[in-house]
Length: 434
Image (cartoon, rainbow, N blue to C red; front, side, top):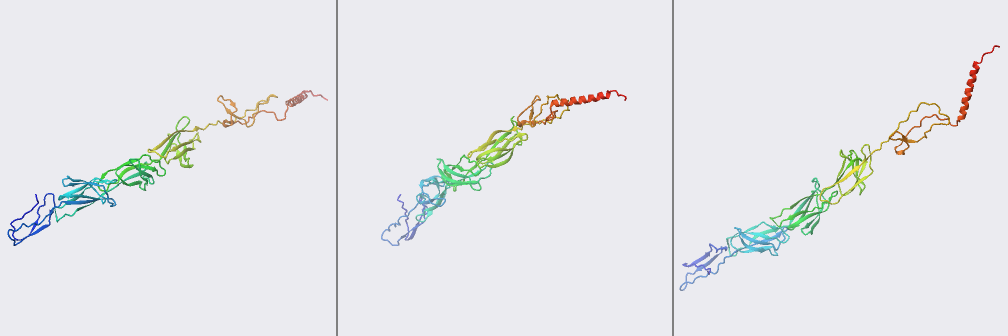
């Protein structure tokens, strides 16, 4: 109990105590203790007191740092032995980042981090060290080296509806409380955006500006930075976020709702007045479509009607909105064309054979030059408006010559009759013999 070691029956001479086995839990001290038994002493020789011989336990120190080598305090550790049993716990790194474990018996141990410094990911890697079984005098403190704590990173990729990567989309990152922790993050030529120095927790990528020509996607992309990871955390892949463009379509029909193919349209951006698409032709089902549309105000304008129909001057307007988390496709309904109006042309009427002269004082009804007529269903003709009218040529008629008088004509006829009768009577008179 007193810890004494006694050697007897020693002849005069010089000796050394050499430890061959340390007490349980202690480091064997390889130092020796020398002593001398004198050759001559009066009476019974005194017991030589060689003093104390110390056994020690081991100590170890670990230093906590970040990725840049800055020391970190308030990291918490435990120490486990080779069997995985906890032998020391709640060891906390100090201002110098040092975690010290003492009173360790010889053996193999591990530092295990149980709590990371605030804002850092707990490093699940363990740091192994050994307390040697034998050391001279006081054992040196074992330097277990450094264990780093890291912050994490996350990456998001911007694509369009067909998977093409999109640069120049702008984002911010918000935490679980909605607080912005990073902003003005812009996608590069590979469509990627990366945010660094993230503490463990839940976050969201939020788009603040869409790439030019695309609709801003209002759907946030969530991701999580895990509280524990081994060594350097892997970059969290938040996946992809799609930006869409708009689409609009309508059906071209006649007044009876029958689809009309081959109508031609152009699409105008009414904000700028620019024609953004042309040569848009209705298909067999009458459908006209325009896709890949950036947010703006638009109008479809008919440039060519189907054959037999009148081109409409109506503009079919619509808007592609600025923000949407889904594909934008607008159905604008129907667009009607009216059929062309048919114009009936009456061919010229052949003149009748000249009839007997009309009685004096009963001239025919002259047709005034330039008068127009339109046939009616029962075959009669009536005056009509000029838009649906046809011109009937003037008909030949037995009309009196300008300046003639009916009584003059009667005297002429009577005179001719008298002359003829006189000639006839003279011809029948008997010849006289002279």
